[in-house]
Length: 209
Image (tube, rainbow, N blue to C red; front, side, top):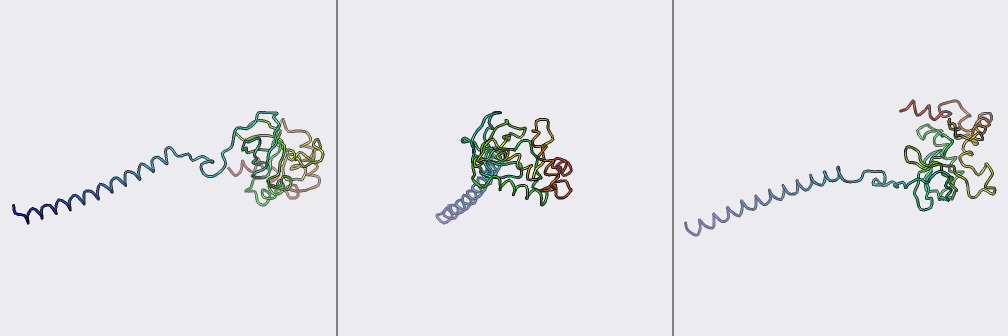
């Protein structure tokens, strides 16, 4: 074999090696991409906290009293707050408000709660433990209220009094809540101004699920 044949043979080998190298790189990239997808599906946290929403902390035990700072009004009977360093989703006990999808009542109920609890305001939480969804249950009291023992300080009760929530149908619901509901009905205020499912949020949820 002469020098020219050797050079040609060498060039062919180099071309083959380059093609094999490119194929190898493509295979490596494909496998790396597949493994990345598999890792994301199997191991990446897809909880609410991982999707950008705040991860909620452990609720307080029943009868604990803590001061909180409002971080969000979720709807007419649910808020979020920072309470002694814990981020909590708080379900106001003893009341049931129209769902956000119940137009326009859900929005009106939420707006009414915002009036009672302005943005970033502080409030007092009397804990009633956690519910099955791991939300904090409790009664909220306004800190700016001049008389802390006054029923007007009780935000849960005020949502019923103003006609934007109903008294929850449960044995533990205070009698004052039921009386407030009857008064709101008589005055035909809030949700009582017009007949409809907004007057029975539980029934609405049953019919729409």
